[in-house]
Image (cartoon, rainbow, N blue to C red):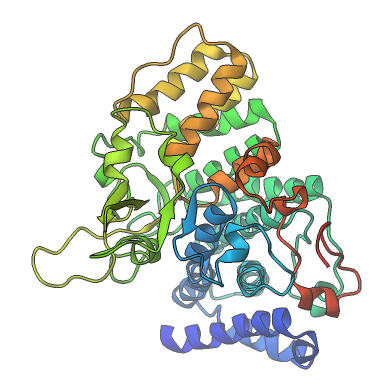
Length: 457
């Protein structure tokens, strides 16, 4: 059976998830045996099992760039220059339970969860799949399940942690406490560490290896304020010779970057971020807030290399420029391919810096912080800095190093309890309850066990 046929059948498995997340009644009409046949057909041998697993990443890359851009708007990083109707709720933190963007993100992430669980279930009876391939794919499925729930719990707070595709269970789940969700995330990641190979299973760094699970585990411990374990896990990455910090900032987001821990492959070598942010002419749609631009110190190389400066009619605009390619270019000179970077080494240095500072290892924290500052062309941190100021310096470094990248700024403001102070002063419409996105209205309607976040109707 060809890979194409199996991918089509696996698409039907994913369609079950889409139906479930958009209409409980329709999903209930899909009988269990049919699902089982589809799953069994998707795991005939190593080749078809591998093709099936790509569905997890297909679902993830389909919406992640939009979700990350939205998180930069709900934080204090970027704005829509035209204040477009579709982006106003993000910029103004005035989301509603029927918001299209919120619903799409929720559905997409639970589709990833469903795909992960379908793989874990399908491998149980996959006699034609080798033990080595089963181990690898179980590791990937546990990792992606943890990654999707990591984003869910940080965007929405209490969420169900789903480990089954049984609709009788998933259609009636209740929200778990945040601590319970993190317990499940950490358990999945620890399992993934033991199952995933040390080397990447395919060329490039798109399919997760052991280090990818470790990178997310370091973040999970940081968010849980388990400083000791956050330091341990980030140190594993930092000491791994497979990863290094390029001195050329313009090579950080290339497909061949030595800094990348995990990236999602693009088909044509340009990312959705590049297409959204980079302009060939005229002013960009998405621009940085002045507060972020003013956070850069003089001579910071990141400002000159990772920010596009455009002046139109005497007005200067600043937009993200980490990804340089905005479209496919086939005529020479063809630019180097870029992939969407999820985890990279610089973040691990900043995780360890924060974890060390929290444990009163200020010299160690300063050393990690200055590793990032040095590459940016900035002076060393004052060795006599006090702990509170050092933590603020690390926060600021995360803000400029990881600007408009993934979910970092939005999640950082929330986990450090700084959202009220910073966003309240910046946004007239800010309310404390906006730190969580609203649970989609449709899910509240079809599941009597699901409740809404405070501040939403």
